[in-house]
Length: 188
Image 1 (cartoon, rainbow, N blue to C red):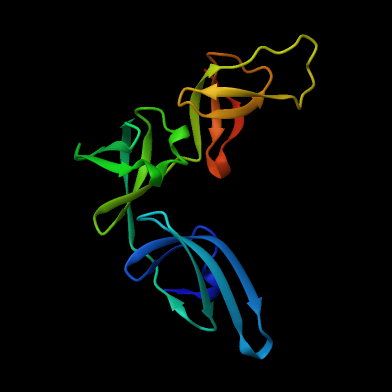
Image 2: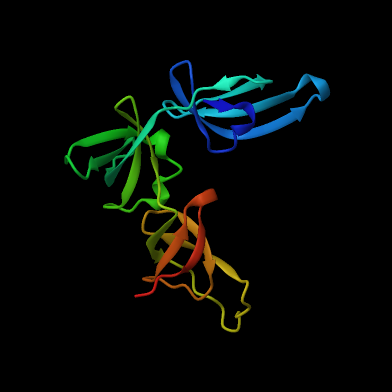
C-alpha cells in the first residue's frame, strides 16, 4: 500500500482492479487539513488516462506486476509480437500500448514484459539500446561546431538528433528515456 505522498511519477498502482501508472503528480498542503494530492494516471491495460485526487492519510494499493524477459519478433502495423525467452511461447500486444517504444525496438531485441494477472499489458525497454543509422544527410564542409546536430534515421524508422559526424552505417547508443536521445557512437 502506498501513502498519498509516495505516488511519484512512474509508480504503478491498482484502481478498481486495473493497473495504472502515475504520469503526473502535484501536492497541495492545506495547513491543518493535511495534504491533497492530484495525480494523472494512465491505464496499463487500455492506455486511457484519469485524473484522481487523494486526501490525507488514504492508502492506495500497489499493482502486483510481474516482469519476464521476452524477445521482440516483429510488428505488423496493428500489433507487436513477442516470444517468452524461457517457454518459447508467443504473445501479442496491441501496437497502441507500445507505440512510443517501437522506434527503439529492432527485431530480436530483448525487453521486460509487464504481466498483470498472467496477461501481458506492456513492456519496459532497456535504458540504452544500440541502433544502426540507415539515413543521414551530408554536412557542409567547414560546419564543425561541436553543438551542431542533424536528423538521422535509425533502422527502426525513428528519427533522432545526432552530432554531425554520424554517418550511414554507424551504430549509435540511444537513451530510450524521455523520447530518446543520442548518447555516443557504439564502440566496435
